Length: 385
Ligand code: SAM
Ligand code: SF4
Ligand code: SF4
Image (cartoon, rainbow, N blue to C red):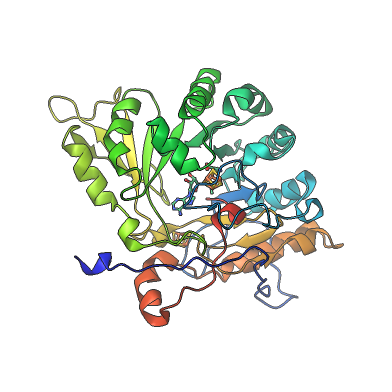
C-alpha cells in the first residue's frame, strides 16, 4: 500500500447544531479598497463567485449530507438568516465590480430555493468590468431540472452543471440515499440540453468500491453528446462524511481505466484557474475528435491546484469563504444589514481578498501530519461546491 493510501479516517462529527464562527475583517477599518481588479497575497485574482442559496437538499449523498447527521433533528438555517435575493444581488454586484466574471449558484440543492428564477433574472442583468454579461451557471442534482429548465433559461441562466454519480439505477439510488431514480435525472439533463442550457457539464464524484465500476459506462454514455463529463476525486470537505483516503480513486487511475477502452489525449487548459484537467477523445490518427467531445478530471486531493484558485464562496447566510476547506468565513450579511454604503461593502470585500493566503489542497499532507485530528471545516452543503 502506498503512503498516500494509508487508511486515514476523518471521524464523523455531529455538527447538527453547530454553526461556523466568523473572522475579523482584515486591514484597518479606515483603509479603503475601491472597486477594481484585486490580487490576493499570493497574486491570485478574483474571478469566480459561488453563491449557496439554500442549505437544504432533497438528496442525502453520503459524501456530502449523510443521513445519520442530516436527519429530522438537524437544524437548518431559519428563513430570516438566509440572504434575501436583494442582499445577494447587492453583494454580487460588488464582487463583479472587483473583477468577478462567473457566478455559480449552488447549495444544498439550489432548485429548492423558492423563486430562484427571480434571483437569476437580477444576476443576469449584471455586467462585468468590460461590459460583458456574466457567465451565469448553476450546479444541481437534476431532480427538479426537467420541470425547471425552461424557466431557468428564460430567466437568463446560461448553462448548468448536473451531478450524476452513476447510470446504474440501483447504484444511483444507493448514492443519493433517498431512492431517487436515475431516469428522472437523465430526463432533466435532456430537457436542459434541449432548451439550450449548455454546454452542460456532468459531475461524477468517484468513490472507491461504491461507484468506480461506473467510470467507463459513464464515459461511453456521454461520448459524442456535446456534454463534458468530469470525474471528481472524493474530497475531505466538511467533517461529517467520514472521509478516508482509501475511498479516493486518483484521477490518474481514472484516466488509466478510461484508456483501456477509449483513446484519450491531453488538452490544454481553456482558461487560467480551471479546476479540471481536460482530455479529448482521440480519433483513428490520434487527433482530438471534437465531435466525440472531451472529459475532465478534477484532482482536488492528489494534485493540488491552489496556485491559480480565483474562487470565492458566499454561504447561504452571507458568510464569505476564501477556500472550500476553510473553517470560518467573513460575515458580509451584517454589513449589508447595517447602514454601510456600497463603497464600504466593496472596500471590505477588497480588504478580505487582498489578505487571502488560503491554499489548503497544497498543504493538506503537512496539515494532516501536524495535527492528527481534523480541523473543523465548513460543510459542502453550507457553502456549495
Ligand atoms: N446539490 C447540488 C449538486 O449536487 O449538484 C449542488 C451542491 S453540491 C454540494 C455541489 C457539488 O459538490 C456536487 O457536484 C457534488 O457532487 C460535489 N460534492 C459534494 N461533496 C463532495 C465531496 N465530499 N467530494 C467531492 N465532491 C463533492
Ligand atoms: Fe445534496 Fe448536492 Fe450534497 Fe448530494 S452533493 S447531498 S445533491 S447538496
Ligand atoms: Fe482553492 Fe482552497 Fe481548493 Fe486550494 S483548496 S483550490 S485554495 S478552494
